[in-house]
Each structure stands twice: as structure tokens, then as C-alpha cells.
Image 1 (tube, helix red, strand yellow):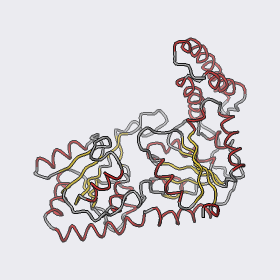
Image 2: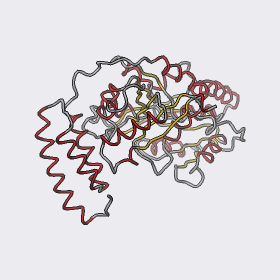
Image 3: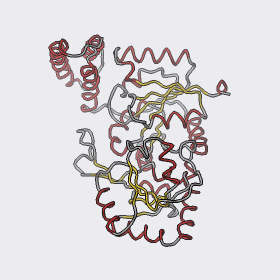
Length: 395
């Protein structure tokens, strides 16, 4: 059947040692498309121009009609790189951490025809500026998270890292005699999706926390704020497992669970009260769990990807004029990242090739950037020559 599917190319920035979100994107698109995956980090031995050339050759050879680019951060994948990719194909950018990187993503996304975001509020922000955008849940595969009909042997489960306000909540619950099972991504009991899926199935209530530190990157306009409340995949994939999620308040989730299917708390007392209520009343717990589970099925891949495919099919390739000019900081960071990544990995030929292109071939909209690019290019070239003999050589 795969020969009848549309061929698409998904570009990720790098391979992750731990199981990444790339796994879920590959699964969700694989059912409806014939996909090819490329990790840009595998191509760092050549410069950006040649990376784009290789990708364009793959597009022609594989008859690719759609290319999806990973957003969230500045690396090789920036607005100019996307523009250098075959313009006869549809282009989309996808993001799972847009609340932290929205200021950046909205510039990079202007080289694309549409946006897929893991945050429904971000979708509205993109639409405000004229982008075609759709919410796309990330961890929503029923082949990974599913109802195993396990006996509920745990009262409350928390899985994840103890950061931000999580420790405070967990300690408060324990002091009030709530039995909480805690586990992390590297614990033996939960270090695979199969084990985690079983734990969720065996638990009556799953705790979800939404407080997240803001990025300290200079291009994040929210970096002066300590934290924000962001959507987590737990709020919808827990439902696929047949358990109830009780979540810290998150405005994004309110757009998804409009009929109070997801119980919220805003402080320790509310959290304790909600959990006690459901643990002491089996019928209310069963009723709330069923209502929540039914809603979560709306976001399951087999169902939701039909909506996603229809959205993509209806996108027409039109030259957009969303960006008047590239900000100085954006072009500067693009330049710095492109040579910095090769500097760190000690790729001699690609480093100097990229520096040469950055100095003499790239066209910068901000002309006042030219002297800075020249000075930094020369300085970094000298530093590279000094450190190269003492580093593990990568040619």
C-alpha cells in the first residue's frame, strides 16, 4: 500500500540519545504517508549549501511532494536554509516547544506554507499573523499508549523529573497520606514506553504539572519571566491508557478540554482535595475517567491524522509576504550557530567552508551585520586553527 501514499520528507535537527519526540512524529505520519527521515546532524561534515543540495537531490529522486522542518531553536534549519530547499514542494514547520521559541519560530516559519504546533495557544498566535496553522498533538499513538485493562493497584502516579514546583506538591500529598508512586525516564520500572504504559494502566490517577522555566536565550522575549504554564502530552495520552489525569492549570488545555473533562488544580490544597474526592468515591472516579478517556480519543493518531492530512491537502502554495525584513538578532544568531556547531564538533573542512560561505556568499538583509560577520569569522578561524591539533580530529 505504501506505493500509493504521498512521499514526504521530515527533517530533524539531531539524533537524541534518549527516546525523543522524533519517534512519535515518525509513527504518526507513517500511517498516512511514505516517509523519509533525515537528521541534519548526520550532514555536518559539509556546509549548509551542500546539505541543501543533497536534500534537493533526495527530493527529486524520491519524488517528495512535502517537506516538514523541525522548529524550536536556531540551528542549520533557519529561514534561509528552508528557502534553499526545492520550492516546488509544500513546506511545513512543526514545533513541540513553541511557547518557549515562538518569537523565533514565527520568523523561520515564514519560509513555509503552514505550521503544525503542539500548543493550541501558539496556533492562535500564528493565525493572528496570517499563518496557516494547526494544533498537532505529539505523544498520541494508541500503539504506544493504550488501555491494557490492568487492575488499578496504585492510587496516584507521577512520572517525570522533579523540577520546578513538583517536589513541593508531591511532598504535600505524601504528608497528607496520599500514596504517590514516583518514577523517572531512567528508572528500571519506567525506562521504556511499554513499562510506562503498564504503570499508567495500573494507576487510578496520573498527576500532571505544567509549570516550566522560561528559556534564558536572548531572543526569547519572555526570558525575564520566571516560568510559564505549558501543555504536556500527559494530558491526552493518559486518557488513551484508560486512567484519569489530574492536572495543574494550563490555559492551553482549556482549549482542548472545553467541557471540564480534565480536572484542574492551581495550588496544593486544590490538588489534595481533588485527589481525595476521587479516591474516596469509586463511582465518581469511574465517571470522570470515562468522560476524560472519551475526549482523549479525539487526539489519537489514527483519528487526528485524518484531520491533519486534510489540512495539509487544502494548503495551496502561495508566495507569502509575512516578513517585512529579518531582524538583526535573527541573522546574527543564524551566522553564529552555523559556524559554532562545526567549531564544537571539530569538522575542519566543513567549518572553513561554512565560514567562507558566511563571509562571501551569504546575502544579509542587515548590512550593518557585515563587519561583525567578518571580524567574528576571522577570529573563530584563528581559534579553530589553534585548538584543532589538540582536539580529536574529525575530518
